[in-house]
Image (cartoon, rainbow, N blue to C red; front, side, top):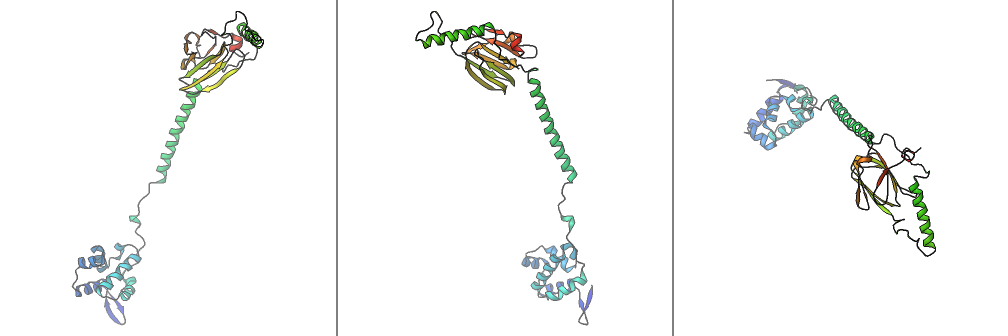
Length: 271
């Protein structure tokens, strides 16, 4: 039993005074704990003067004050005895949650970024490889003789209509517009120009997209990825198998009846 000197006479330690006061009131540890609504081990630690198990000094002093008030001891006296009976302890750092090492999280983030970068590179390579090797360019020079004949025929028809009569013997479909439906199943660059030299559309097209244009035949068509494209002229499918080159491109002329013919080299290469 530890003692301390106070007022010139020996006084008992904190634990002994708490136990004696509790027993004088006829209370057990469990009964006292129920009245204070605390765990019985806290009161056992106070009576054993095991203040370190209670955590920081502020918690130990709080439990000591409430226990003393319950059993009729003098809280102020016991508080003055507390520094002599226990060394103030700081927070119990062993009870703090341990965070994952920062290095491990950094490695996970780096790995995720590398995976995303790999997917991006594969996507760019796939897009580049599906483009035509050489992007053709059409010149504004006059096309084949059939194009000039068609333009002359259109001019004659327009003059005849302006004078109030149709051109004798000229078929009604000479200047008829043809509707072209282009369905893309893969990424492909395409260009379509009508007989008047008007560019109906040009550019890169995404998979599962469709382009519908109308123009005066014959139509001049250039496709970068011909196997991934289907054409329909006025609702009729156009066969392209014999026009596909080894690089996957196709360059041809399509008349109003659906017949196809390769474009001359001058127009195909844009010289």
